[in-house]
Image 1 (cartoon, rainbow, N blue to C red):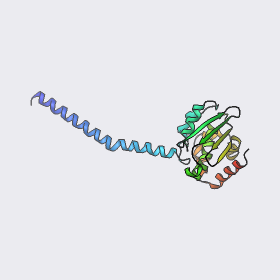
Image 2: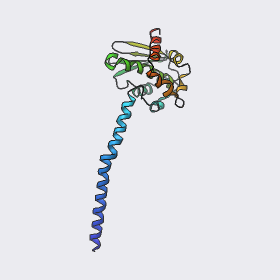
Image 3: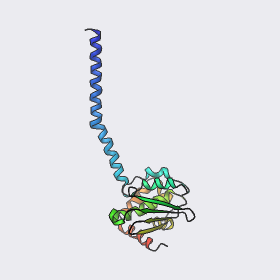
Image 4: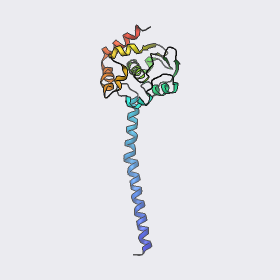
Length: 189
């Protein structure tokens, strides 16, 4: 066989193998990766399935970094709802004003997210003392001491090992625990 003919056959065979490999990747592997990314994004929107590891990079001793707090809360449940932030550094407080009412988001989701997001903020931001959530139809003020009393421990300890899933996320299915949290809000000053 002519050496040029042999080279052409090898080139055509390699091209065909590459094309088949590309088709297999695009039809088989890529949709699986995209599907996993979509599933993770969906899980990040809900307190019971949120992956706290994804926001540990925002851990900081002080609340003074507005960009850090904004990014943290954008990656927590309710992060997809339009909102604005203001920091009150004298009172060590964050004000989060949502451009929606709680009912349109879903009352159960809002209640779980208030507990989850407050716990995450206090566990990750060392000197943060107060978070004020304002919706178009309701406002909630959450104090660090309320959340610490609810869990009975320093909140940074919840980030150790699998404590977060056991002590925080598992409690979100307990309606009595959620009501205990909400009752503590009604007495907050």
